[in-house]
Length: 406
Length: 234
Image (cartoon, one colour):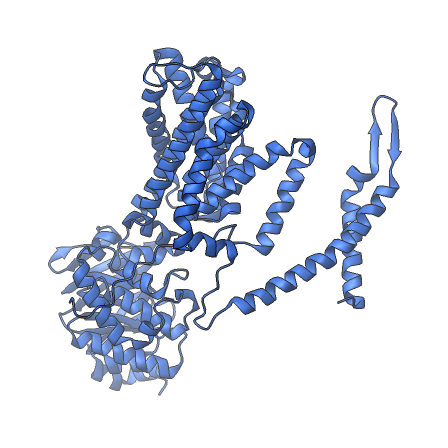
């Protein structure tokens, strides 16, 4: 393990990282005193750290390889990991579900409004992740502009409320519908694109939406945004601030449950199967008589619907929106939720959403390194667990094996 | 059953098919042979609507289909097994087969067809839960053919069923093709392996540079001097 070759490899890695981190770790410019401080000792720490870490890294890679070999069973299928097994064990599902529901319902009574607020935001991202999961995880269409639909929903509520005085509940379906419409509008010209090209066009779409919102001041209020959006009401009843926060939380819980229910049904439907087939092989899809255009359009539209709904709730939750909430970064975060959680897996995406939003909130002290940690976490995930936290498991369509019935 | 009347198919400005006319009658196995780039695959794609012809007519069961969308053509009972198999690699064998019956809603009949296919290809029954991508080339070809059969096609288009397979497996595949034909499915296949293709079929067409140069019964083509020299290597 400590052969000369390995030491050489680690040494090169250490030197490379010392070089890479040189500008941020060694040089410190003090603009007030106009001096430059050279912190050479940091370079040494980086070198030693990376040297040691690279051994650990290789050891872990080796373990992963060994693990894979062990996991391959006779029939060629992979043995599920612990989390996977727990997620699929039918005896555990009901109690676990009850426990989660109990915690979810009691949660706002145990913590302060700030915590509830963060949790609500995380749940909004869970819905976004689940929506994007349809497009990316199921249909395999990489969408980097997903936040645009989120913006469409939020602005639909804000503008309709400002100009026509429409309430939250009236705007919820309208926002979802508008987002679906935008989803179809985006999907129509790009039906023939795939992979990288699709990603670039959707990325452009997301940016266009943001830039329009930022610059069309008369329409959207420009960078200042729209203030004073009313919080959701309950049959005309309005709440005090702390009650409203709790109310939106419960609303979000309901929205997540609805989303999971609908998406789960969709996944196991004919349309869901067509999405999976489309992701796997387009040519074969055509040969099977699947209408490619219709399937792609439906994936984009249904994915966008959830973003629109989440957007309406987000506008009500924040009472204030501006284009800053709908940057490319948000698209990336939502996409990371899907990838981190496990493409196509509902439970994984829920878990991913909670982790991706809650962790940065609770680790605010190390906020400066947020993107750094984020990137590192993504790389580590891709190397050691590319299928995500919880791998998606399609419902197997097995016809029963009884000969007597036929 | 299928009548192609002087179709011309283009890729941009390039004319890939020049006035192709082909007739296929019910119950036949018809082979289209030719060298690389002759336009065999394009012919199939034109029939199944993936690259529709610019001019000319294609009639299937009395209806014109040259302008129909691929999924409509499949629904009419004309199924295309694409070159290179194109099975769904992540789906299990069973799920692949069920995708083949995507347009059908008669569950009891689907189950009957599944049983029939499992009896036709026992190896697929053994590997029903395995992911399609982990099958061997021959098994994948069997899966591709049986997946197409799940759509209950009246006419099956096979694009190079022997591509990249060992001679023993190829023979097995062709035996199955004949068996499928005997149970009532008309088959139109294109092949580089002219010898084997013609031995299994009733009639054949020879294609060169986008044109049909010769057509006859398979036996006569097999003994034709030109065909022998050009495609059979005798």
